[in-house]
Length: 72
Image (cartoon, rainbow, N blue to C red; front, top):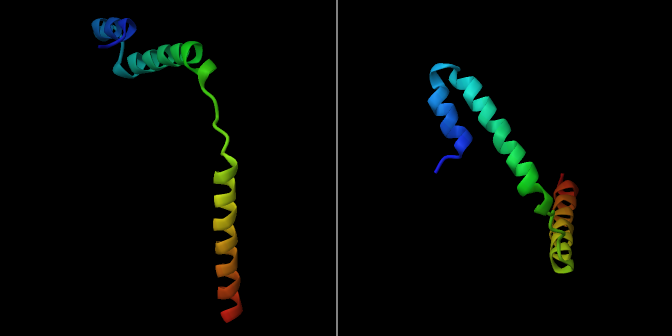
């Protein structure tokens, strides 16, 4: 189901170009997102186990790269 603003824009299509309608609709949805969703969005921090796994992978890659350089 389309939002009421989108439906109004479709009705008013003969008054505006599609680009203007799309732009206005995007701004409307950004406003809704900022008001209702953004306050609850959180960046998840990695767990200690995930960090340790990443460190191990990077160590292995570093070791492999050092070995490649030593061969040259």
